[in-house]
Length: 313
Image 1: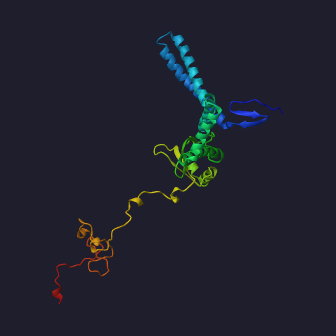
Image 2 (image 1 turned 120 degrees about the horizontal axis):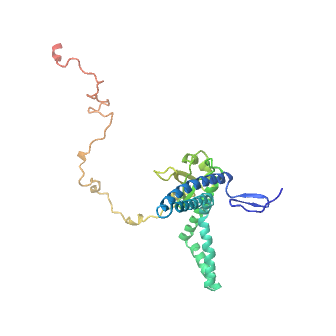
Image 3 (image 1 turned 135 degrees about the horizontal axis):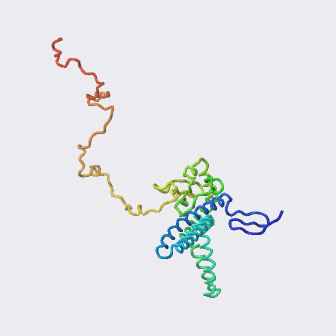
């Protein structure tokens, strides 16, 4: 068996062992979509461009120009669809890529603009200052966890979260820190729903994979069902001591309120106008029996209302 060391666009071979970057079902699906998009774009753009160009030049030249523009537009759309999985991976690693470029080019510029001792001093101040200051250190730590959660969720979606038949995973948008942990917004692709993430055991697996205490999945929009969010809980902020300035506003010595004037109700309140509490078992004669409701048809009525009782004396 021959061993190939060549490289491909969506996968690589190292000493006969294949390293897959994009899965085979995803590659097949993207190629199929690219072919369909090429022909649709080429036909529509070619017809429209040829019709418009035929009014200002010879119809044959206008038709050829329309075919050329349609082919170029179709190829551009097809290439965009084919490389979309790669662009999605670049989006997932975009913060790390930008940070790496900033460090490399920033250090190169600093070394060329200053002396070596000045460069090391500036680097020590830039790195040591935020690390020594508490709020800045916590902000950097929160940003690190946001980047980590995005990658951990992507691994969860590829490992055990249900995906559609084309192998398409949810699109991870942004992540930001919260007092309890992190919050990540997702856009579900066709074939997925919020119920797929709310299945028994899925949320617990997400929390374990993100090295967190708990995870909650909820809708992020009232209009779009595909827009959801995941709240990662790492700590309980309510158990810590909350600093408040309200105790400082209370005077140290309170005046004595033992006089009878302290028991007087506030001015402007008429207690006689306050209705008594309604009790179903209360009655006017305090007998403990429920009074009869004259409007209740089940209440018995006398048969003869005009008879005088003295007639039977």
